Amino acid sequence: MRISKSVIAGVATTAVAASGLAGSALTTQTSQASTSAGLKMNQIQVIGSHNSYHREVSDNEKKIQVGQNPGAVDLWYSHAPLGQQLEDQNVRQLELDLFPDPNGGLYTYPLIRKIAQLPALTDPELAKPGIKVMHIVDVDYNTVCRSFKQCLQQVKTWSDAHPHAAPIAISLELKQSDPAIVAQGGVKAPPWDAGNLDSVDAEIRSVFSEKQLLSPDDVRKSGLTLEQSVTTKGWPTLKNAAGKVMFYFDNAGPGTEIRDVYRAGKPNLEGRAVFTRGAEGEADAAITQVNDPRAAGTAEIQRLVKKGYLVRTRSDEPLATIRNNEFSRVGIALASGAQFVSTDFPVAGMASRYDSDFVAELPGDTPVRLNPVTGQRGAHVAER
Image 1: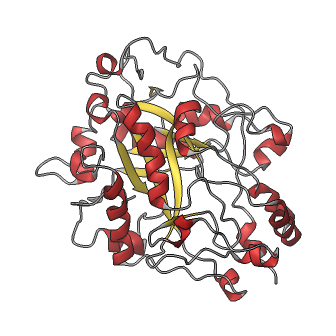
Image 2 (image 1 turned 30 degrees about the horizontal axis):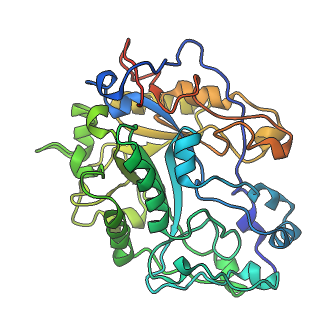
């Protein structure tokens, strides 16, 4: 039984060297309350972790992966628990991949474990009804938190202990099974229909109170669309957003069915817990992505952040970044002004398995700094 080569190709993570941004790092010398007065949450920059939940599978399963495709080595990276990333790695943006499991138990016996003659997974969290977190069903399933609620609780535990921290943004990618793997006997995940999309909101609100959650309703001003609100009135101040958590869909962009279903009857995401990636100028537009900050990407990011959007970009691409010794992208990403710069290697040592010391981090060993494009001149940003 073979696992589709196309499933593995191109989904790996990479590492890059953190190049400096001369003169732009801020010294964190005073408290959040005093430094953030008037400074808005789109006027800062933070580092995020890509596929924040991800853990490698066992050695026996790795042999199967790489036997199907030598490029599967690019799946062999692991992250710390989410709270540890927030505490020790200065990460303030996270990414989770979600799969529906309304009845529970759907993902307890991944196909690759069957091929490796390993037993089914026994984690009781997998047996419970509710959304599950993993990279690729049946192929690359290991994670620091198997359920969405479990991941959220890791974040909440840390956030409760750090009420003055910069707001945490969590990207949610809503995924489905790969048809090639399903054809080989793998699990077919349920669709992201209206009911399963509602469950995303419900699970978020089962962990975070409305006071802890930064929702579209918290940003939208009376008489304005969400997009008009962020482009004319701006985002909440850091003082008001400190200690809060916000969510946005990675794949619910323009023209996607998920976005259409999620905002049906709610053009401004009224009552919703998650931001979408609406087309520029549409009512629900507020957060977007420009994954490659190089070349034309720089100008596009700067145009969008100056307009008032929150933008996520990536400082890394698959391991070719290390293999090719191409380390300029981190500096370009930081200079672009994207508020969220996502990496697979937020601390030194994570790339050492590839005989590399590369790391992507903010200058100054800080979790948050003034945005180089939108930040107020003379302002200082700090957490306490």
